[in-house]
Amino acid sequence: MKSLQDAIYNWLTIKIVSDARPEDTAAQETTQLFDQILAEEHNVESKELKRDALMYYVTVVQEGNSKEYRFPRDLIEVMIDQIRQEPDKYVNYPEED
Picture 1 (cartoon, helix red, strand yellow):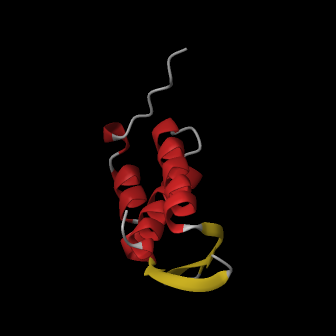
Picture 2 (cartoon, rainbow, N blue to C red; picture 1 turned 135 degrees about the vertical axis):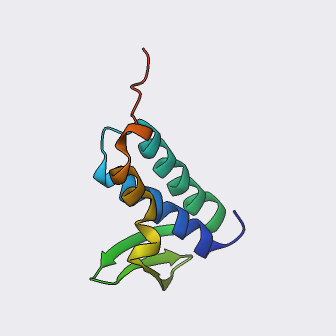
């Protein structure tokens, strides 16, 4: 993933889903994938997430430098809103042993 902002956007979008649906193994695995992309491809050492009524704020530390990114909540919450509106289309299939 070329852009750090794109990687953070993708991480945040799926993190919101995985936080709301802790039993969703696909969301959990995808969140871990984007955590790995942020760490390995973008050298993100840490991230902090905050939100208010309108925005999500993600502060990342990359190679010792801190930078904040802002994303509108309605943009980030599109996926979780769709899942909530049509839960039958987003069934969690447990992993097989």
